[in-house]
Length: 529
Image 1 (cartoon, one colour):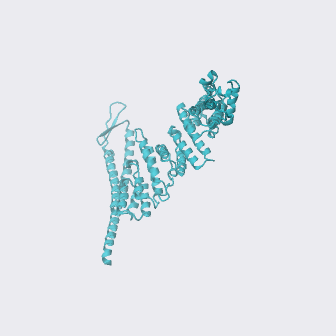
Image 2: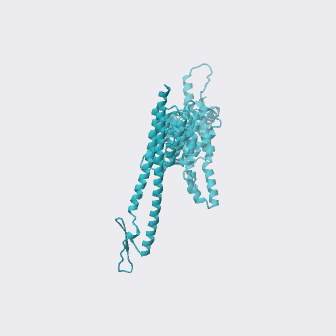
Image 3: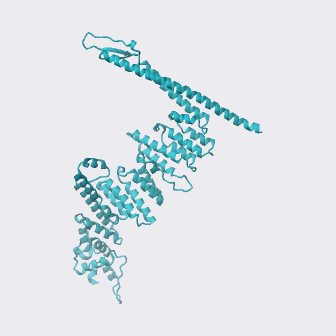
């Protein structure tokens, strides 16, 4: 023991405290890092006069043991094990990939020692640096964030395509190497280092989904919950364009089934919201987490729409994305309308979730309202009125308007609004046609004037507009076109006037029918009494 105590401060202190004892001493070292294997390495170091071969496979064992036994400079001078192992680990950047993985795995199996958390970070930092170097040294490092450009560039070259496939395999080969080593806490650390080193975020997101899928095979429910929460937090650190909307909805369904913490669910919803224009109806049809509630999770969809509008409220927003989300929500409203447990307040919240100007047509919403009223017959007068008022009757097509006027579930007041909206459309159309007529005059009102030059110019006057033409034949041809166009417009006006008269007659007939029905309903109780 004297040899060991000459290198180990902890053993020396134990001997100093037990001086004068008459019985044999027995030393018990609790929670010794690395167990018997590490203690055997310490014995070799001590009995070899402070010398031992330090390599990637024993460096972390020796470092942890040296910390535990206080084998520092104050005890054994320049031959102390702590200094030797520290210097060896500083050479970690020269270790091979296999040595790095082995060192990381060994360090994770060691008992936790105070002040040694930097070991894991050193290993991971070197691993990420190696990944970045491998990617940069490759001529075509594949990136999932922009796969189209690579495919387009290499589609005509079979050798290049094969090279891309090989490069893709190399870029993801490390998935399997790390997936069985890293704990959820180390995955977070890995992703932070990846972001710091600016490694490909697309490949990183694929690794996270691969990690989740692989670790789920033999995990308990609690472990699955921890893994899922880790993956969500890690994905939030990446560029959101590198994570597909489909993948996010996939992990959302898993997260809801595991009942993850609300803070992690909010993070996931904030990632999905801005990409809502890429979602499909099937993505939105997420079952409600509460059995007694609606069939589908309406609150989730409302929250996603809120995040979408918040993210797209800045300048440069594409109106096409807004209209795409509007069509998606309209389809969702039609899908959930038959749900008997869908409350009117939630139904109205879905209809009003998007600003009115975004929708070009309210036909889908009208049909959803019609279905909802068919299923929910016990609504109060106030609830029905709120639903009727949620429609923009000026954005109904003539077919939907015609259906509405014959729909007994809609009061005459709202049927009149729909017909008036259609009549206003026709009046605006007629007014526009009259405006166009004023710019077109019959052929005999064309005024022409020739110049003395061989090249002459004819002036055609169209109701205060002077339009220059070159050539007499051009005037004749243009005049014929205008005449044909005017005849076509006059025909359309006649047809639209017929439709307008028909709709007005139909509106009058329907209103009279509904008013007479209401009058008969009111007189019925009097007759009965």
